[in-house]
Image 1 (tube, rainbow, N blue to C red):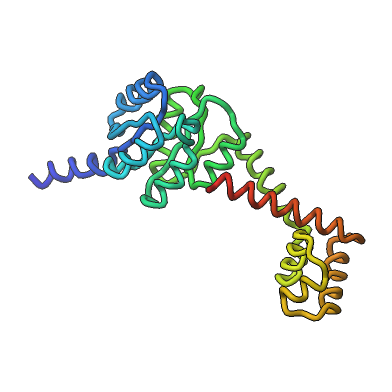
Image 2: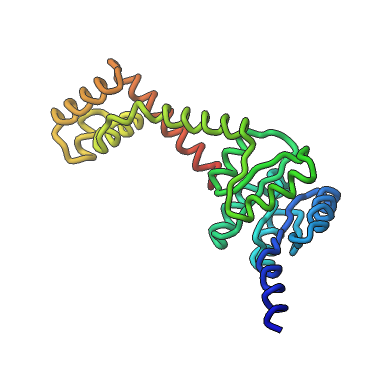
Length: 233
């Protein structure tokens, strides 16, 4: 009896529980049939919308969620972010029919473990599920290279403010709002001369000579921040 128990235990622990989310039923059925044919993979649930996925995944308790990137009522990256906040141990594998750099970036930032195209061979998709289920990440090398390039570009974008102190950053924001030196001083409880000194330092660090340049930069950074928050919010 003991020997039989030992044989059964590994099978229970090595079965990969998979949840599928895709708004195309034909795609869902095809992926489900492909994965179900494997002895170590079990389909524990499906959804065609983000709303249904968020409601069903916690109850299904999958090890891996295969999520379509684009959906009628949202996107896979948001589902990934939301569901992993509740189930951090869940591995999300993003599946899409096109090579979307923005979607890749959002998915990785949301904590996705992998990203594959629907053109992937069946055996490769099975391998991808097993890879992310084992705790490893799986990303297409070319897509990863572009994503890293984008992250570097974002960091370089922020470099102009790297040398500024918190107070200088705050003053730059107020310049962007159109405040005069006196108004900035009143807002921050600083003498007007002190504000002038701060602004002189800001101009030197940013390589600028005109107030309008600083105001334009501050406005651009504010717009970028709001746009980024809009994507994630």
